[in-house]
Length: 557
Image 1 (cartoon, rainbow, N blue to C red):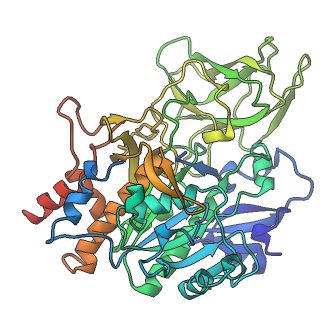
Image 2 (image 1 turned 180 degrees about the horizontal axis):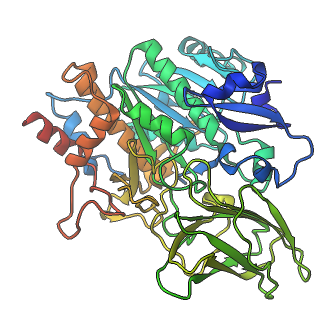
Image 3 (image 1 turned 135 degrees about the horizontal axis):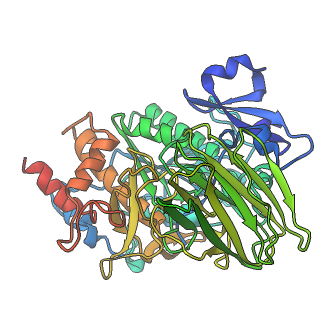
């Protein structure tokens, strides 16, 4: 069994340049020029394996970012203009998600053939592994068409989407029209690259105190999906737009990390666009912020833990040069006493009068940012209000953020009592150059309350733009149609508009050096801005996407 899918191995991020210094072969999985994975045997699992290995060497965990009008974003106007008529022809769109129901009419041409160029299913190990990859199965257009013409398609191409999220996102982006359902994707003549992600290893979930029943995905598998999409686009000599409708609240929220760095690189290259959802953590009360500027130099954070959330993690990030301690008190006021920062120590605390165990990594500096990071992991957590005192080690001002896990990794019963809705954009949407998309209700032009808010922890302006994301008509598995709401749906919509820009610029030869970043700037320039607000802001970014206005401004130059 390949070690990247073997649950008895950790996948540790290392610098690719250092890979030859390890025992290579199947111990190393190449990700890109910057990063690779080192597979090491777990042996006896121990939560303090974080500490023995740095926190930043473990991949982060991602969740899905979605649970109707095209006219409001100007798509119909552009497509009805005979001088433009941009439907995505000649552009590839890559959806890295939960897979696809490839037999659905939304992904087929009028003659019944597929619009999918290729599928990489990371969960199936019985087919042909893609060239230069080490696991999963690749299915070509020819194989998919053969399957569609057979009585038992899954016997030929055994890939499915049991969750439905990937099918919905792909259909919003580029689904074939269905008049009876009043449905049409943004660019229904684009062709697909589909990457079905494998679920995160149970060993990683266990290490980060994620319950076994929760579905989530590894950052590194998403990165591999991006690399696969790039190789297919290069093989087809076509411009490509990647849509990522997933996110994580792990990490520094500063736009740094393996996948963020890679997406930054791609977006600056001609013919590569990236649209990322801002996440749906805006109103979940899972972010806390404090700036202590005057004595006494401490802050008391109150965390309510619900009965359903017996195990979970949280993170606290402060800014250099300050250093902070943490003192954790249970609802019955048992205390850990102050825990001071160290280089790599992991400490375990068991409470006398309840069954709670807490693992604490108070790390002087995290590898990617150099900032102090405190990782707390609760097991058998006692329900009620917990009190966390954050205090400076010296009498000086300090600032910190704290985040709880996103999506359904946590119930709504666990939250910060004095939460802050800002700085809730999930990674990798806080990357610098990819298009970060928030969601608004196209029926009344109001922001969807759960939409993630900016800015990044280091002050970078995000989100970039708002797109329709409320009850968007979409395909669901089983030849059915439904609706999707959230920033994932909005990111799919915006990805379709990037594909329209690429068709005009690259496919039609108007500007063949168009990069994803160029397309993003054009979309920002053409956005609709409400005179009642100042722009950019941390809720709307630069405004509502309006592709007709984009082309009016572009062509009139």
